[in-house]
Length: 330
Image (cartoon, rainbow, N blue to C red; front, side, top):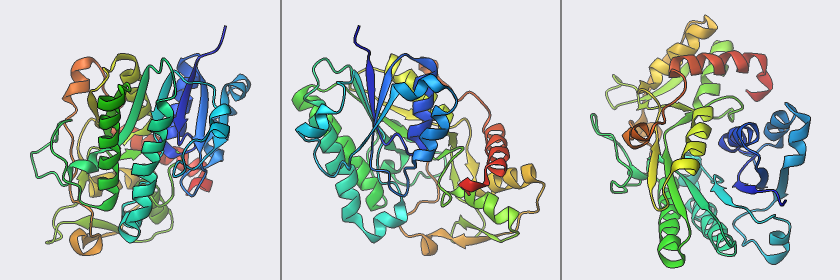
């Protein structure tokens, strides 16, 4: 009997490798990971996952490919025809998108179009899940949490490129009847995250007794806030969606509660038993293209029966304790 497979783009990335672990641990699917292994994608992530069980190595195949180029016939022959495609790969650094917006168009719009074109060649494809971001909706005023089909208001080229990828997915569903599902995800934290991200940066500053910069409003009285969510919970949500999600629908994946960035840093400091030294910086001046508050409404998934598995404070504590034991990831 031919084994079923899932194709993941960006499996060596931060979110992708958590997703690979989830699939290996909970299903019988084989996995093909399409990766270009750049600064954000590390084979070490996958290697650490595969080392947990020897038999898992036979179930994962990594194929190098940069999605800025189409998946030609030679590359396609290397890929066992998947039942499911999870398109997680993306360029995702806001500051880099401001410096070089065209590279983000190539990665996130052209790259998405290339994997969609490949998907058209797969007979009996069951689902194509596109992994998008809260940033497509732009800044969220206090008290506003955006729902899945609210209007886009991209605040930077990264957000616009992800919105462009979404629209290509919608177009391919309408034109070619591809089984598209779209997710929007809040800010993700977890083990093996790139050192430039906020939680590793907090840990690094605390253990080296450095002053942490926290972006705030113009008056420097209020820190920016997010509904932070752990990568394991994101992987749980994606598995839930590909089992129970409906073709053509969009789903917001949201953390259990809103934390401002000072509160997050204080949780890390408490876990490390360190004194937090910080300064507020006006984000409008320091980070053009960034927004002070992002917020999504997660009620759609909650009503379907999914919620984050652990309190975010506990999740942060787990990340800190793991990172201190694995300082190579700082």
